[in-house]
Structures are given as structure tokens and as C-alpha cells.
Amino acid sequence: MELNIGVIGTGGIGRDHIRRITEVVAGARVAAVTDIDAELAGTVANQYQTRFLPSAEELIQSPEVDAVVIASWDPTHAEYVHACIRESKQVLCEKPLASTADDCRRIIDAEIAQGKKLVQVGFMRRYDKDYLSMKAAIKQGNIGAPLMVHACHRNRTHIASHTNDMTITNSGVHEIDILRWMLEEEYVSAQVLTGKCNHYAAHGLQDPQLLLLQTESGILINVEVNMASGYGYDIQCEIVGETGTVRLPDPSALQLRSEGRHGFGILSEWSQRFVEAYDNEFKHWVSDVKRGKLTGPDSWDGYAACITAEALIRARNEGTAVPISIGTRPAFYH
Ligand code: NAP
Image (cartoon, rainbow, N blue to C red; front, side, top):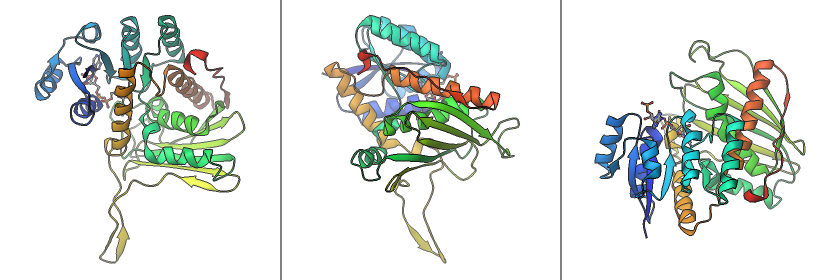
């Protein structure tokens, strides 16, 4: 039986997920879409021959919608996730789960009170084959115990409304989640170094920012988050262990030798980078929803990312190291 999915938000990633559900994922269809921009959502509904509903609330409550994808702007996520939990409908919420760790805790409380895991967070990198291989290499002991991580998240340029906090909550949050997932350890401290600003970044934007994290066993992590690299969308990650290192490969691209040069292209936009990971994320989610057992990143992971982001922001604003206490994952999320 086909899973009827309602999509909230028909902006950049919302439209991509609608295309994905329609063209890539078997056994699912887009049953309804909505967006605060009704004209845009109406056009998208026409394009994909689906229904436009005038509000997220109506979409979530609609009997024609079995499960929901939230792809609207960050501050709307928590409210819509709560509405899905009230309706006992499974939801894939784009990151971040909520704007504050307290909001995430309220989602956790509501989900536990419903007695069923309903929420998955859109940390799609966990479905990327190269990150999966890195994690397998660590687990097989190929590099010995991890000691350090050097990572970077570079955007070619940023949107006009980008803020210093979004560097952490909207971009750095992917690194926060994927490293915690790969290392299988919680963070215990956060620090942020800022220095000379790139004058190509918007006036007043502190860019780049260097995020420093330490895990419970002492692994040291540095992540450069650079919103205005100028040259492309470039994600890098190297884990240094006691006996070796493992590195995220560059996405495969044509190697060109020509006119005295040898090189390959670098992607320009985030939307080009993790296409297969998004596809896998949705295939797994649809299959999990159908069998009634979610296995992807959950509300607890959304909370862990959020509390870490908050610690990083406080550390940057106060110019000091800030301890992080994520706490113990409730049995409900094991
Ligand atoms: P976007 O292009 O700005 O699209 C967001 C859409 O949501 C816009 O059409 C916006 O309308 C609409 N919207 C705003 N408030 C709404 C509300 N209350 N109800 C319904 N719709 C509302 O942004 P985007 O890049 O697609 O990002 C959307 C979400 O996905 C964000 O939370 C972002 O963090 C996340 N995201 C995740 C990834 C990933 O790698 N997992 C990548 C990109 C984005 P207006 O434009 O009129 O405000």
C-alpha cells in the first residue's frame, strides 16, 4: 500500500523532497503540500498533481495524510512536530528539530507520553555511503582508537538572512550530528574561536568560525564552518586514530588533464552534494513508517545536536569553554 505523505514547506529542499518522493522512492506518494506562500505551494501542487492545503495544521490533521515531512523554516519546526505527535503521525522533520534544547525536551516528553516513536530528524549524512564506510572503518579497528577530528564545512556563499548563530545551528549542526554518530560518544565541552573576517561575507557576519569540541573520552574535534569560501560547497572530514587515519573522500568527479593542468570540478551548492544520502534517508524512512518502527536519527539526537549548538553559541559569545551535559539517552530511544 502506498504511504500518503504531506509536505510542509515548498521552498528549496521541500520541492526536492517532493520530487524525491514522487520519482525516486517506491511505495509512497505526495498526498498534499502546503506553504506560507500559498501561490508557490499551489504551483508545486499543480506540477506534481497533488493537493494544496491552506495550512500546516490542516495538512497534519488531514485523513488523507499518513505521515508528514517538515521542510519549512527552522523556527516553525517544533510547533509542527508537536501537532504531528498529537495526531500520532510519523514525521520526518528537517534539521534542526527545534530552535532551543528546551523545545526539543518538550518534544521528547510529548513523544514519550504518546508511547510511540514518531519523530525522525533530517540528519541525512548518516545515510551517506562514505560516512557509513568511515564509521565501519572505525568500528573494525582500522585506525585504532580515534584521537582527533579535523572537519570543515564550506559554503560558496550564504543567504542574505544568514546570522552568526545560524553558522552553528543551521550549518555546523550537520557536523555536530555526524561526528557524534560516527564516534558514538557524547560531547563534554565546547569552544569557538573567531579571528579575521572574510570581507566577502556579509557585513557584520563573523565568518569563518572554528568550532572546538571534546568528547567524553577526550577526543578533540575542530570544525571550520566557513559560509563564504567563494569557491564551492566543500565538506571535509578526517579522523585521526592511534594507528591510522580515515578521511571522507571528495565526491567523485571527472579527472581532467588538459592544457597543462590536471584537476577536477568542485560542487558549487549544498543541494548537489548529498543527493544519494537524501534518497537513502527517504527510502529508509518510508519503509520504517510502513512497518511502524523508526530507526533513523530521533528526537534525542535532535536534542543532543541542539544542546551542543547552544553551548557553542554561548562559548563564542562569552569567549570561553563551556561544559556540555547531554545526559543519558532515555530507554524509550534505545
Ligand atoms: P526555503 O527555500 O526558504 O524554504 C522554506 C519554505 O518554508 C519557504 O517557502 C517558506 O516561505 C516556507 N515557510 C516559512 N514559514 C512557514 C510556515 N509557517 N508554514 C509553512 N511554510 C513556511 O528554505 P530551505 O532551504 O528549503 O530550508 C527549509 C528547511 O530545511 C530549513 O529548516 C533548513 O534548515 C532545512 N534544510 C535542511 C537541509 C539538509 O541538508 N538536511 C538542507 C537545506 C535545508 P517564505 O519563503 O515565504 O518564508
